[in-house]
Image (cartoon, rainbow, N blue to C red; front, side, top):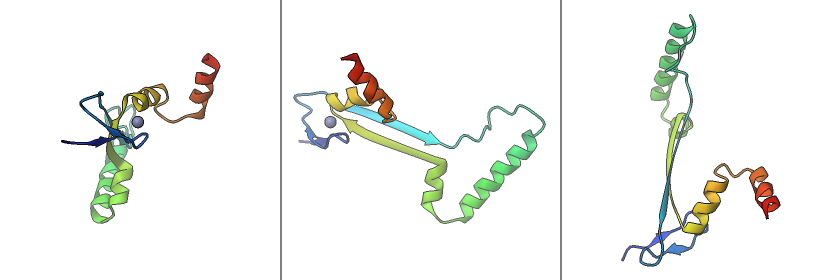
Length: 101
Ligand SMILES: [Zn+2]
């Protein structure tokens, strides 16, 4: 039997008793490749190529993660609800939640 652990609260999720939710996140550096707006288009593309070349040369995975990072989380129902209410963990949202009560 496969056991899943909630990445939010750390407790195990029993797939027989409850629904397991999966959150997939993608975070990448916006390099404005798709929307060239002015004459600097060529310069931007050159810049990006240079960045990519530099990344290839540097054997440091952390640099690559800064440009593109993907993550997957298993969540229980309660943590899913909390995540959707405040995906970025902003303290403002917590205050709003309290004032709604
Ligand atoms: Zn949880």
